[in-house]
Length: 316
Ligand code: SAM
Image 1: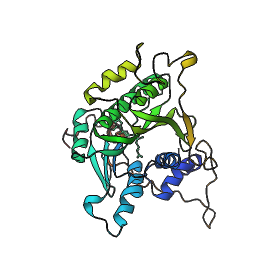
Image 2 (image 1 turned 180 degrees about the vertical axis):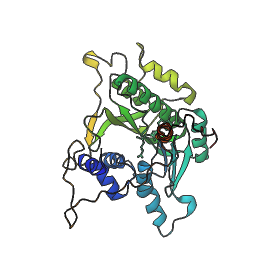
Image 3 (image 1 turned 60 degrees about the vertical axis):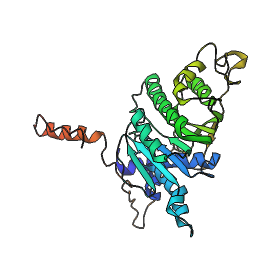
């Protein structure tokens, strides 16, 4: 798809470039905030699966930059934003970057170390695997990212804190809702206007972190498994029998973002400049080491008849 054609068919892609966001995903977080006021009173945040960085930009613009501009701002008092991804990202003011896999315990430990004993008020996770189109498979891999996010949450989120996570709606959505309800008193599944209706993506907005009394993060997996078992979890709404019959759990599901605003499934006419042409903007920040880079190198090498290209060294 050409740039102008994508600009026409994807209004949020075009708006992201106009407003200086690295990705259209920025609007999803902004629209979740419009509905849930997620940034109020927030100082310490973790952005999981952050590259190319539009959510981190939102965090920087909403939390770090306004605090830095205050006349009596001091370095030690500024909001702490830690962003993690498998991919490196170009720097963002006020955002500390950790490159790593969030399902790996060592990455979680690195994040925890940045908090140096203090706790996070908010953890956000927009993680997505490379989608295969096989919904069950995609939903499963996505659930592994949510689980990794929840593991980090149980180590660093303060009581009363919030967790926002991308989910893929599917047959296990009720199970996921009940698992999240074990830890948060309010869980809502939200669909921002900038997320296409055709996509199975939605966001779990989990408020008021309140783990079960005596909970030890080491017991997370055991506890989560209990929710899906016949003897059920301890939560009233999600106790046994929550999947069907009169006790079936109804998941609060909310559309968010200005409902009279842009529709992500519609095409919009392109604004023309004085000479009647349309000027497409370049992306704000192309990925600095995209996973497809090596594939492109290999394609180029094969078209030039080169059989073997040098493999990148592991520590580069
Ligand atoms: N929120 C980002 C933004 O606004 O720019 C977009 C995130 S993008 C949809 C999903 C990201 O998840 C990708 O950058 C990918 O590298 C990352 N990701 C997927 N699996 C991961 C993992 N196991 N650990 C860390 N990051 C992961």
